[in-house]
Length: 93
Image (cartoon, rainbow, N blue to C red):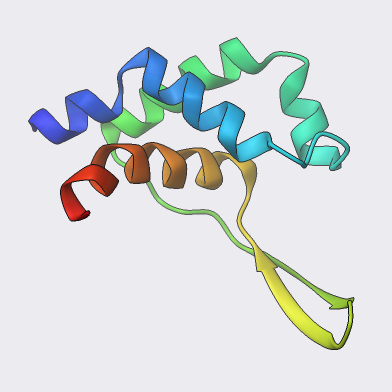
């Protein structure tokens, strides 16, 4: 439970949001989040407190320098990923 409480700390979630959107400001879903990010982040925190189910990944092809398929998580999932890494990363290192 202590881990969950620390994961829900506002500064950790704000930092995770900023890391998740880095380099993706022009992506439609990220740009949409940017207009009301604080309210959306509060809702995300409430949903995290009750349990989290990861959303569907979006897949697409890129051709730089060779063709490959990429699977991208939704922004909310990326925020959760970054929050988890900020909490567990130092313990694993």
